[in-house]
Length: 365
Image 1: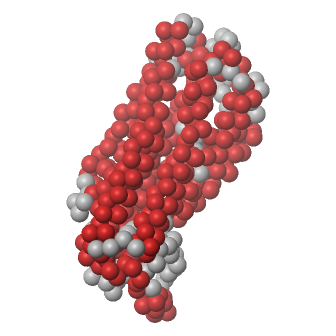
Image 2: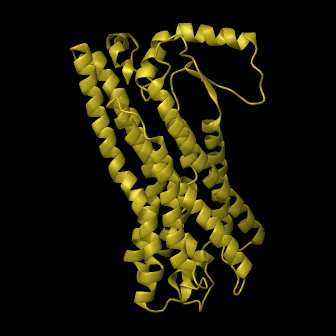
Image 3: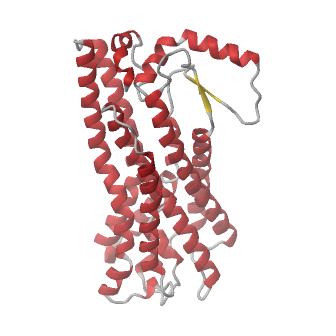
């Protein structure tokens, strides 16, 4: 999981008076790490599923899933970042279970180093997933505006911003001697620990606020495009727009489910520091351990193409013969209208295919 509170566990114990250290006395690291292992394993599975190449049965049409291909590129990189983050959580939890101690021993510099590096890598890749999630919503706006995507900029921001934020936040926390629990004065706590919270939560909050706005604008644009192209807005067109609303809503909901517990934890830690509800905080840590790595698994569900027969995974170890080619042609023929719909609307998977023929001009999206 990615949370500034857990990152403070990498520091030396200090004098034992820190509030976080009093909470850890009631904390069961075995149950926590078990939850991390389970959720990160599901996350790894979901990310691998997203990264695997796949065939899309739309070859017979003039527009070969133009908008879907653009979205697919972003989804793959989102899955790569999710995969690396989930692997980091899984490996760290395995080591912590074997060591039977989530916090480094006093003067155990090697454990501090491992904990800090693993926390930094996990934080880096999860921050990258947030940026890629934002890039997906931004690119959808470009698609509907018939503008080219800026993939060089997407990559630059998705890999550079996490690097800057992670290095800055954790350097202030751990340097020079990883003694963040020994900060006795309020000013020392604010200067050493608070910046890491802010740097961690700002990108997350940006996605939570900006993505719904971008998707609402995309829905409005899609409605206008359909109305202008068809010259009408009947129940069939309304069904299309409603399906898009559901898709965008689910994408936003998944992000909130995975990361809202972290924001609640940060609020509790800073607003109720001297009267923390210990049991509630520990329960919240377990929820974060469950929901954070599951982002990759949920993304595999919400970003995939939902209509049956629209795509087929291409497993690296499986050789495709004539039978698969025949299956591809048969599936493509049977679902031709559905694939036209998916070429035009990459996020729409359940609306009637009949009405899409009236909007064939929108294929230029």
